[in-house]
Each structure stands twice: as C-alpha cells, then as structure tokens.
Image (cartoon, rainbow, N blue to C red; front, side, top):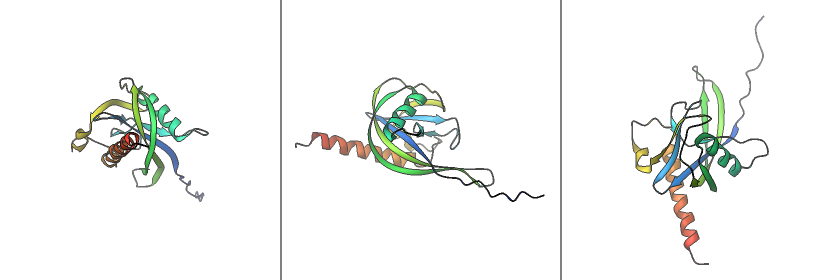
Length: 157
C-alpha cells in the first residue's frame, strides 16, 4: 500500500526581528536553531496569537538577550526559508523588522541564542562572520531609518 497523502502545506509564519542600535553598535545573536543555526542575526521570533508586532519584538529581545528595549518603528519586512537536505521547504517565515532603542542591560544569551553581543556596525562587513541572509542590508536600512527619525524629532513644528 502506497502513501498517497498530500505533502503538508507550508504556510508563512509571522515573526519579528529587532534591530537594536546603541550609538555605532548593533545587537546580534548567534542562532541556536534553524533557520540559520550557528549564524549571527538579529534577535527575534514568532509572534504569538493576540500579540502586537512591537510587543513581540520587545519580548523576543528580552528572552534572547536579557536587554530591555523600546520598539520605535517597523521599517522593512523580509522572507526567511528553511529547507531540508533535499531542498524541500520546511518552513517559511515572514520577518517584520523593528527598529529598537536600547534602554538597559548587557547582552546575555538565552532562550534560542548561543551567543549575544554588540557588534560595531563596521564589523558587519567582515567576510569571516557567518551571518543570516540580509543582515547587512537590514542593518543599513535601520541606520538610515534611525537618522530619519532623529531628523524628524529635531525639526521645528
């Protein structure tokens, strides 16, 4: 008897990543789990039912790094795909990127992170640093958005 059941449907999972800037530093975690296990990326995770994007971001950053932040602005979104060894799609995440302001705390890896630490933005250009796809671009966009927000706050009304 052959198994003729259809392959399970993979549906996109809404998730957040928090880009925490502190002067010229950005907070990063080395992921413990797929997708991108062992790679450096932004702290984040799945949005829970009934949870806002900003609340999910603040929660995930606290769980993964012990850092307290203020979520400032949603500034981009991207896709992350997890494939099995045969190239089949295991998971599809839609990542909402949220610019965050550091309030307090020192990075301590927790939850889904192997390591957590501040990186100077210039370090993101290193070729020997295993990073999740899109990290450099998202960091650049976050810096640009932070500058725009700072200009808006300084502008006279």
